[in-house]
Structure formats: C-alpha cells, structure tokens
Length: 179
Image (cartoon, rainbow, N blue to C red; front, side, top):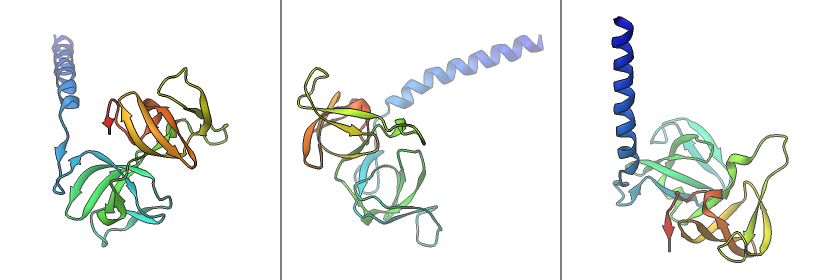
C-alpha cells in the first residue's frame, strides 16, 4: 500500500509539473527596471569586461571577457548592473555601461570541442538551404545581426554579408523576428 501511494503521488506530481512547464515557457518577457525586456540579448562594447559574482564593484571578479561584440543574455537587472549568461551557461553581473543593444550572435558555439576539427556552417546568398554558399564560417565566429525572420538571419561577418539558419546561432531566440 505504501509503494502504491508513493507511486500515485509521484505520478500526480510529474503530471502537475508537465502541465505547468509549457505555461511557464510561454510567459512573455518581463520588463526590467531599464524599461527593456528581460530576458534579452545584448553584446559587449569593450574587449575587456569584468563579470562579477554580484551586482557591485565590491564583489569579486568571476571572469574577464576579452572579446568585444560577444553576445550575452540579460537574465536580471539590479540598478546599473545586469546579470548575464554567456553561450557556455556561465552567469554573473556586468555593469550596464559595458553592454550594447547591438545584436550579435555566435555561430554554433555548442559544437566547439577541444581537440576536434572546428565545424563550419555555410553563409548563404539567400535565405534558403539551396542558395549558393558565399563562405564557410567556423563555429565560434561572431556575426553581426542585420535581421531575422524566425528561420534565417541576415548577418555581416567581416567583409561578407549573407544568411545563416537561425537555429545555428546563439544570440537570437528561437523564432525571434528582428527587423
């Protein structure tokens, strides 16, 4: 009897969680104290930015970013500080003045494996997988986003301009439209 009751409670709890999860995922972004939505993507203005363990200069530096244009996701705001998450999932606090609203994205950051060949993705002339490839872009490259239609993003990378499938970029939400 005890096993049956425990099993029933476990099944009921699992059912409740599965009903709540889609509702939570469908919630619209909240507006932070800045007036901008949270979460949202931003990029680094500088090639040397401290990520701190808390929202203030009294908190220790957890990480130093050395890549201007790197996309970060703002997940929380506190006064002039933004709690951000990077493509690797590391989270910490950055002073708002080091962040830009300019949209950038990393190409296939999840496919970079130490000691393995660097994967590449086609930069295409048009927004179609059948369009001619203009260049092959390595995973980890930062792309400047011009626009996204929910499936494809028009990007600028150095002297190249073309399209990359949105699902191959970190720095833009699935289905997000950018004009």
